[in-house]
Image: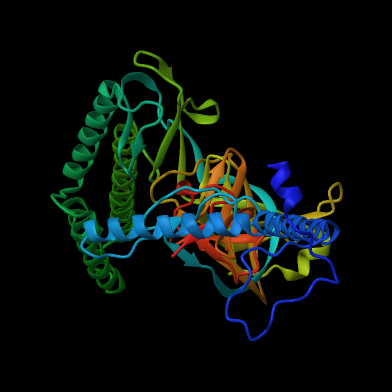
Length: 469
């Protein structure tokens, strides 16, 4: 082979070139060795540059290529799912690696809700406590032995319900005695019914005394005429005069006795009313609607009346309740009767209660430099209890804007309240400060501007999930 190459004539610059008119091209064209090596080196450089540029392009555009590929797969999966659900469109989550590490969490029907901005009154934040509207230590008005206790602690009673029954045997016996005495006096006066129509001049004793007085007066007049004619003696005239005076005195005395008997009868009637009340007092009743806070007696105990009256139960009325608020001296001028108060208690964190200012104290306490204002709070279901601490907001005439979010779009993690805000198709967790809850909407005091879009069901997403329509 080397011999053959050696026998092949070398083409030099002096060798004749092929004729341009010759249609037959030479079979082999041999270039000089240095020029061939130079061209081979250029091709290697070009290939290396192309490889470097291609690798850089692939490295730069790889995430987008992968995202688009995953998006196509997601669209295909969504299309398949839509066909299985009668053509209804659904929402899903994007693939990982996009928008700063968004996660893939394929989910259907992820809805979003807008926020609502409303104009509300400015508020004054206060603290206070709840008190019973009425509280009474119910005592006995008569003495005796407790026969039956009809209520217990925690019972709800109505006005007039029986609380304690005292043995009424002695009271009834005294009442019967008083009734008998009254009947005797009525019989003495000849009264059968109402005493209001009593006329002392119609009494038989008074009429008899009146007749005697009239007869004595008539005899005296005749005696006087006869004595003037000197028909009778002076002794007989004086006797008739004395009989007249005695008859007049008997008449007046009879009238006085009848009137006195009538007053005694009236006194007996009043005593009978007292004895009747004593019998009624053996049944101790509720003075108002309320709850039994304490039961202080048991059957068989001696119950006293008077200054040392025995307290049998403690009764409180909790509908409505009084909310006693402490108002600092710098805010006294902002409080007016009738203003609305919204308050919360720790026992019901998700509920907001309503009250209206009813009473404003006329003085400021020297030690605290604060004033007490009371608001009346309806409590129809009895959920609130006297003694609970309350944080309140008093509505003032000045208006302010409030951001409202659906309660379902708010998620609680312990004491932390958060929502998921949709930003550039990504679900982002946002911690917010909750406020009042009313009509299924929660006031957001801080953390949102009101222009955001929230995930309607925060339990189905995580921070960083990508939402695709």
